[in-house]
Amino acid sequence: MTPTLEFKQNSHLDPVLTDPATRVLQADKLLGRWLNTNRETRGIAECLIARDGDQFTVSALGVGADGPIEWPRTLASALANLEEEGGQRAVVVAATFDFGFMTAETYIRVNKGVLVIVLYATFRDDSGRSNYVNREFFYSQD
Amino acid sequence: MQFAQICDRVKIDPASVGPISLSAFPGTWFNSNPDTTGIAQIVMSESAGNLFLQTFATGPAGLIDWGKVAAHVFTAGPSSRLPAGFTSRYDFDFVEIQLQGMLMKGLLVLAQFHSFKDDSGRADHFGREYFAQLHDS
Image 1: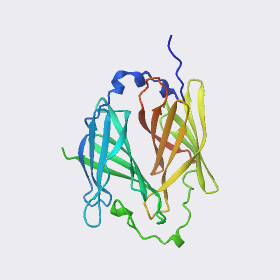
Image 2: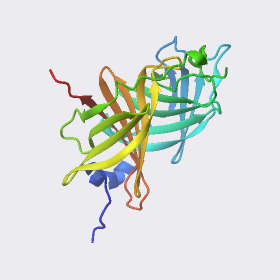
Image 3: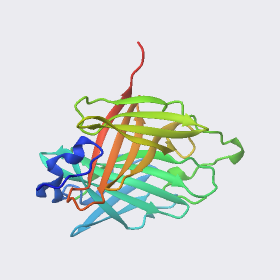
Image 4: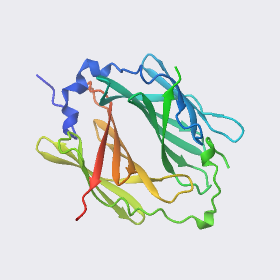
């Protein structure tokens, strides 16, 4: 007897979600060192995504006043990306960088060979800065 | 001022900081894909300077109302007061769904992160869809 699945939208009942092929995370296209396509960026200059088994980590270099600022290596959650990339189920990783004064929630995916980082910055100091969202694009250096 | 990227080093006069206008959000946002199997529409509203959203997703017997939740609003930059996106979260018994929205040229680009908490074996997954408000011509 098939168990009844709870759902909140039709796609929660999509058999593809229990297909073993979906659970095998096709992350090869995401791994490695990525450089910002904009050399004049004032944001993230480069990003490194690594994998150890099912564990993903993300590190980054921010552009600083006197050289790059190393962002802490952060564990990332990997989710199957149901949008197909090159005929394969791809992976999106979500990583949250905690700087104390600011939290940067990111989600990272590859679209047609370009790495896209969407960043939601939340300031926790009293600087008066606005929380903001930003998107930057990266190319593979590997 | 602390920063992790130099674009965050901005001068802000706290006395001059005004509220963020939420006028770009309120209304009903419809999925651009009529055949979606996910979220069909989102009703956004403003109350006392806060943004709320009510999500309606497709179901086998019609739309499923996820209820109304608060959203965190994000601007276009650390010195901007122009709204550019939001985040919100639905926590159901069997699944947690994080929503991250970005306004782009009148469209709402909605990223969705579905993390299952039951033992159904379903894969946690990501999706991205586009929404637009209908205007009278």
